[in-house]
Image 1 (tube, helix red, strand yellow):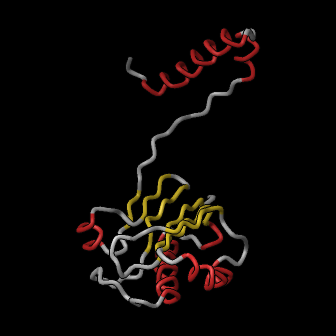
Image 2 (cartoon, helix red, strand yellow):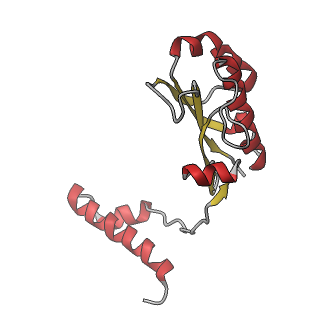
Length: 170
């Protein structure tokens, strides 16, 4: 078939017809209610905050597809990948948010666009002591997310890692 764009809506209608049979609803009635949306392929945009470090460890710091941006966990490190603020939990957290802000700015976003924040820490009691710092980051509303106590992170010097999911409306 030359026109592959036609294939997805057809498969959608076939699926609806099969579902109608399974739920005993008239196929014509369901077809009237069904809408066909145009499916377009979107090219991912990759962003490297520290290209050499990310290449060495095998990850991309952020990937944007359409209006969605997934940001890998930020840790407290310098441009060479060396841990910074070793032993200083609060400063490591501040450094994580600083790196995350750089990524958000690259995509024209702010922390107001963050919809999910997951925090991984090797010291949950210390995180709870300094978590109020997040009030300076999230001024409009807090995102959904999880706070997870973990045994260890990528390097023993890392005490906290923060990952984000962002939705940027057009």
